[in-house]
Image (cartoon, rainbow, N blue to C red; front, side, top):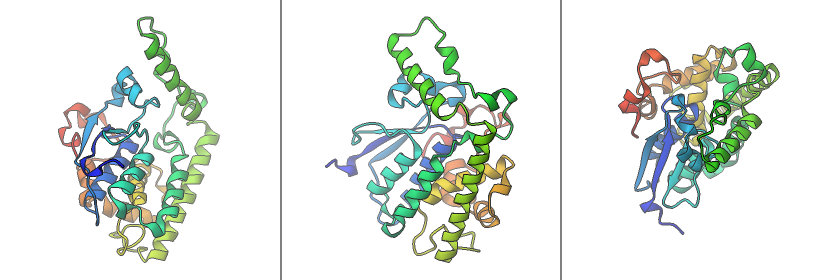
Length: 281
């Protein structure tokens, strides 16, 4: 068994990637959790997906999906290539309080159901008419180049295949309608868990109440709720979770993730690469 005390990880992340926020929030909550077994180090590596750095050959070798986040490490047999696998791995190996045994099945079920929803389907409120029919990928233009190696071309073809299977129809009206309906159902279930745990009505409490504390469900759902509200889809979010997210957006763990910034990038904020406070954990 690997010596996890000497584990050194690199988290490939982008500050305003919704799913990167989830992984970074897991780390921040985990560090402050009880019975934590912290790794030797976790280093952030900035991937500017707004400039398609996630489509460069070296990154596609790490994450063939071409998405952020991803995580590599000296104790990992292979990279972890999405936020749910990263968060569950960290909880199971370093931050056990984030995945308490009595709630683990519920947490995993809710996370898996949420992560089956295409994030773009609820994150972008204004897709063009063309995008509603087919959401294009910049990979298509890259594949038109004649100066790329066969190895890189194969990686790009794999990325395009993943895109076409998962994101190409993300803005189709039927897909968006199902995403919104599924999200509402999941949010309603989270509210029910808050009622059962005694957290309902107290926006300072995490989903499973004060005896349990934060879990990976909270690390993922806080950015989701905030994003829904920011893009004008507050009607999807029960008032209980709206009040909770407003309070928890000021929590120490979340401030270390976003430093008071919203979950959506706006050019008025300046270049991403200049946001040095967002480039470390």
